[in-house]
Image: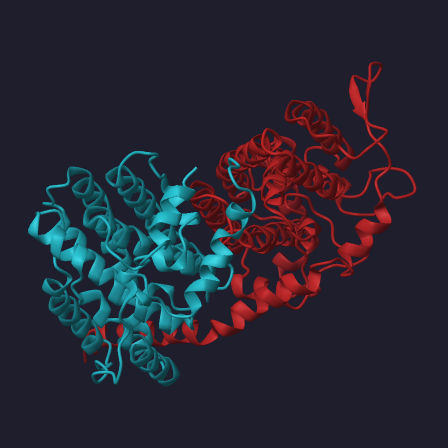
Length: 269
Length: 349
């Protein structure tokens, strides 16, 4: 029922910003959705059963945020017909996803996950805190619920970064290596893009560049306490996710996430 | 297992039963008789046995084995369902499935904790699981091949598990009984969500209907096997049923529970529009129960002993997660020790 939208967007320029209000919400929703997809891979593979539960909990919170944000994005995009959360999650093509590349990266070891979760949850906390005063009341409502959730995520990641950084020699080295590996994906969280500029101008959203320094300062504080060091500026950094340009792993992630839904066009689940 | 208890016949846990050395009066029959009288009194009056009560060593080892098997089943049982988290067909289904798998992890934790009240350690029990010295429910040695299997596990496997577990809410051992009260409530949600997955599929496209029927075909017989071997006849096992019933751990026989499950499930299958794969299934007016065909006990024992489609895979996955997480657990211990040392007050002279 939604092929019309999909074909239209994929047509001339899949990375174009057709409607910044829609596009801004997609960026928020896709970050949450794609990270939940990666975190879901941890269940049954975590270092201890408590952690299967904790990572499952984080993933569940993010799925909840994604559902609210994508549903709202579909409503903002407008009628004819309204795309629902599953249309947006399951039927868009890779170039139409607006998440940062950080969240799509494959599951590494536990230190990699804690490095990613610390940075991402610290960013999400700053973001949702700013969105509490959004002129988009639905978005402000989502942020009010989500800010409490991501505060817990951040606390969980912080506790683990402290344990791993200041645990054994092996865990310290692994945690430091993980920070170096994740660092090139951090700058993209703070890059402004067309939809964010529109959202900031209209009081709907916030410029990512206004958040990133505080995010990095907060992470640096945790690293110091954990006897770890902030990695040097990386030689390259990821860019383009907000315009639908992803890393090669994204296609495989979507193939897995979407295949069943796409195999049965029009079916209800 | 999964609320039932039977090891392979003739096997017991090593270390069970301490050799008596009467060095003092507490090592004489006078003392053991006094304990036995107290314990038997509790059982007779259908009272709960609590962790600090005296209990026969065999009662303790039986409970540890059963609770450990139950906990292992929850933990291994996460795998076939987690297999569909990344591919769930809608975001709602993905969220529900994640929550369900997370619940199973929680059940595993309650049960390991309940077992720990009897003086064992979770890591010791996990070692036994990883090395094959303790079992988990053999149902999880079957693969989840389609989305409908997520439904069939909820409907049939959780349905059978609850049938075993509801009587355990009245188990003579207090901590186990209390854990079961909470577990059964959550399992009931799981069973409903499984039924609902199949309900939607059975009313969907032809392919979805076929998927639902195929899943029921593959899970029905293994679900009936979950109640354990028959109590009588050529396939009866010299398991622990009689002793466990005498101790108030088990309240109903395997065959009674299996019959209750069949009686409850057949009308549900009819409602779903799913045909259960048993040509002998028929209502028996005289008995007031559904008759069903013979269960393949050879397959049951074969899979239980290791020759099932997923036995190797399930343990390999579990052991791999445990081994890959070793450095993380060590780091947590090292950090906790450092923190404790930092916060320790200076020694006072």
